Length: 220
Image (cartoon, rainbow, N blue to C red):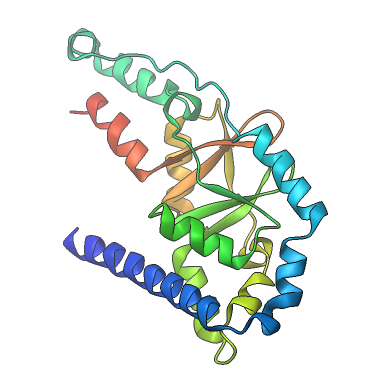
């Protein structure tokens, strides 16, 4: 456990270093070298597109009302009733808000989101809210490490978030049992998995921490 904690702190520190490096590069770059990129990133169509998205607001959906299982309620259950109840708990009842970014966002925006919010991952979604994949902070560090020259802000502005995704997303529905989501995470070596609605839009996330909060009460 201590080893995992140290690894998480080390990873967050690495992401922060990358972020500070990018900021430093931006401040040192002559304006003339960045004009094309700035013009492209500040174009009117792009501004209008992102403003429209901002007005639509974050992708949110009312979460299924979780059932309350107090110690008194659980004490009156038989072992078989506890088992059946645990299997009936859904991802919609237990999911938390997902961390996400648009698929046309730049690598710089990905790094900003990770560092400013102290996240270790972020989902990439399309204009309809459908998840295209997930980016982990370590993935960003690996991409930067492989580029041995010209690690500047212009290069990072030119890399869309979609290109940082290396595999299709694995998702579950609101009605998917939490235990099944846990089995999927174990099978695919994931620490969390996205929850989508009937239209395929990302509305939540469940992870190992969700399992740790919800399941022990039924077996202890």
